[in-house]
Amino acid sequence: MLVDRSRIHIALQRSGRLSELSRDLLRESGLRIEAGKNSLSARAGNFPADLMFVRDDDIPTFVSDGACELGIVGQNVLEEFALGSNERGFDVLAELGFGQCSLRIAAPERLNYSGPESLARQRIATSYPRLLRRFLDDRKIEAEVVQMKGAVELAPRLEIATYICDLVSTGATLEANGLRPVDTVLKSQAVLIRTRKPLDDERKAIADQLLSRIDGVLATKESKYIMLNASEEALSRITALLPGAEAPTVLPLHGRPGHFAVHAVCQENVFWETLQELKGRAHPPSSSCPSKR
Image (cartoon, rainbow, N blue to C red; front, side, top):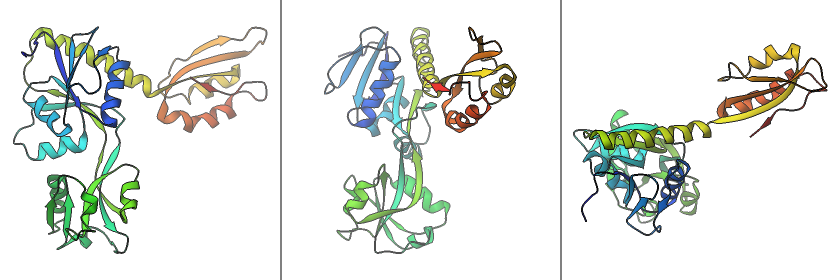
């Protein structure tokens, strides 16, 4: 089947948690995806975009070669690919805030680990040989990297290697195999990438429109809408506590002279840090507690 070049193409992981979260992001961006989850491709019924479901380690290749204009992939996969490529054929446009995990060095419970120097002259099994080699070279550690395609956590038990370097999310798999994380090679999350291959004006406009939608979704996820009632003398102190809300909406309260309702949008990463202080600066006891939406 010929590729329809009047549409853009987005490479996504075929299955797994990252695949589901990537589809959710596109749905939140307004795309109506028309396909079953086991299909190799899907069409957005209300937007000129096709989704291509591939192996995660193939996504950088699809985007670099221009077969797909956009892709969503874990930073761990992207960095491993980039270390083996002479030229990056993609740009990272955004960190997406989901799919968080870490590439960790893990050791058997019985072993003492006193830092990267403990890895010297040891065998380390991994599915990310380039990232591990960079970690070792940066610290001038000489060790043998044993490349495996899967089941890395079995390597110490089978005496293939003393240590492993593998992705860790909750740590449950390591614990089940008598291992514990001892060092971090890379912190990872899902990222949005775009090909460096030139696009015609039509596809560039489509891609830009979708990117604008995704930016809007990400901005909304990072924000909180808060409301509180406060006395007039407290307004200046409260406004100073609301980063990203230089001009909050302030409305007089009916029947309560000198008291106002304050509405503002703030970044989520500061909301909980300022909530308690906002409560204290609103006029007690007559003011209500701040709320979020």
